[in-house]
Image (cartoon, helix red, strand yellow):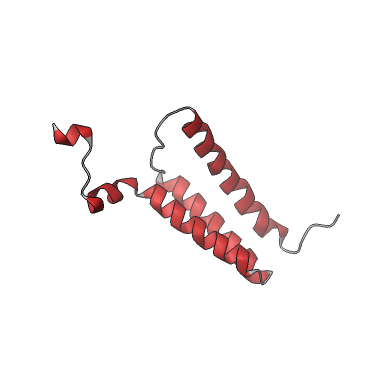
Length: 97
């Protein structure tokens, strides 16, 4: 079995996005709240999305490109979890007291 062309562009998103998915699963199964991503972690995720998008363009795979775009939206929302509370007007228990 031969590796696909530009396999290294595919390896970067698979490894990095897989690691962050595993982190998400482990934290959520432990019953803990997921903390916002640090700057370096966000940079790594955005770089993996960029590499995945480039791979999709090179291979002419629109589904791969759409999937990476959806991941970009999810990562952005994970990066800024507090902004949603302020926009919806909901208050935390500590803020109400």
